[in-house]
Length: 78
Image 1 (cartoon, rainbow, N blue to C red):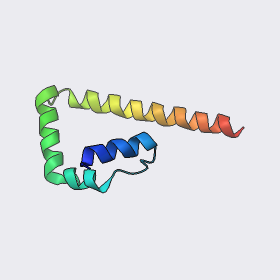
Image 2: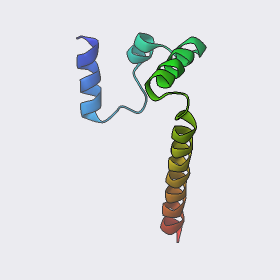
Image 3: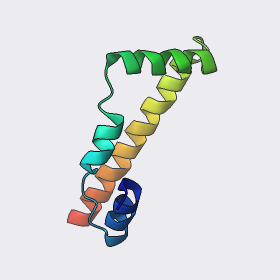
Image 4: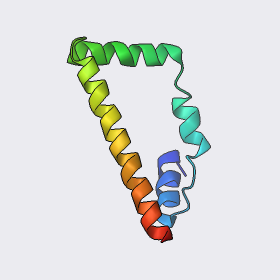
């Protein structure tokens, strides 16, 4: 059985609580060189002047998400 067929079978059963080791071995951990390459690609796509705006937007989105999750948790406990 090939790897993709096994992954589809696991996902179909709903038992995928953590990524299979074959996926981790295939992609490996993201290290510093990979992060630098990703950052350079982002700078090339968006330009250095727009990065603060993008970062601010992402930060506000994360803050709003955390706030809504916290509000949901508080309303469920009451």
